[in-house]
Length: 324
Image (tube, rainbow, N blue to C red):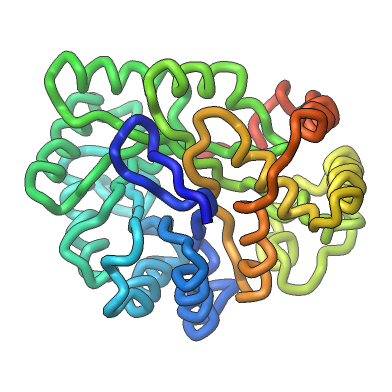
């Protein structure tokens, strides 16, 4: 396994990280625990979750799986998206974040998280309130580092400016939808992160499975797939996306690897990317994806993939989560 610094912080994270939004849902408790243990055994140290994943089941299962192994991982969670129906059960106010951190710590069975991330920008809460709350969390020892997610480049830059002016801990990372099928972060976010030393953590690195090659028809989804379990995802299965997935598959076959491995490796070769989080519902999926951390792509291959995916630099992001 390769390890990279998270932005310009001193924290090292595994090139391949484990995403856990299927734990307690598409992956049951037993399978989820097996996946976590397999990940650790294979050198994956970065585990990412959130307070809302599978109605908090993801955090609970991770806490169970990490009994006796907590010190072996860099544990990241998030808060800020809608948690409930109450007026203070969303956003990044001090009130909401402090409460959610305590609840996450209980479910995760730990007294600290390594990376606490704001799940999305909150237009109704002053950024300084959010950043001072996060700074207090770091000073209390309950949080080691702080990160953002689903922030536009200008929102992230504004937050960094406020932190530096006020002498507060600043964001060391940001999560964003980024893949061969979504290169929109390269327009503004990637240059900003390179300039400011912020590490990028791509989510949906396989475009929800489109880059795995498992989707071959807009009308038929494999049993157990995201499109099968989450009907709203079907709208992503356009003819263009499916055709692109097949093209990536051909490029992967030429290298003797799977589409998933090639797509993940491409991201790992991109500037500012610190770790690539990918989910799994079976241990076998994780085992296959581990190859991406050791696959070296030469300049010719990178250029070929860049040219093939050029249309995905434009248009709308594959995914973005915002408060309504």
